[in-house]
Amino acid sequence: MQLAPVLTYLAGSDLRLVIYFLLGGTVTALTAYFASQGRGMLSAFVTTLPLLTIVSFLLIYAEGGSKTVEDYAKSLFIFTPPWLCYVAIVLLGVNRIGIVRSLILGVLLFVILSIMMQKILPGTKL
Image (cartoon, rainbow, N blue to C red):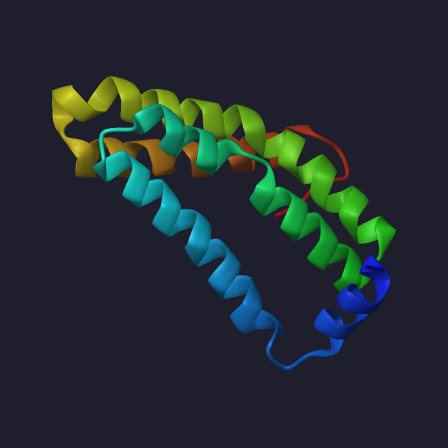
């Protein structure tokens, strides 16, 4: 099966956003399902498995070409340190301050660090 015609079809399809939504929802549903079954390691594996980024890379390529994929990939590197801090805050805070507060604090830290990274690194903007 040739990938180019599929990507071209997706880029031109009115249903592409629905397809994107369903793909993302599938990963979210699998993550929640495995976590609820007490399989936290498998749940984390599904979440971090590059399936979503593979699909994202392909769809971004279909929508905007290789330059757009390069920009997206570089941006993933920029947001990795803030994301790791977010996860650490949730990990350290969930038993101390509760899930909601640790999530709020983690997301707040993620946003602040992301803005700082954007200001520090030349040629980047949110």
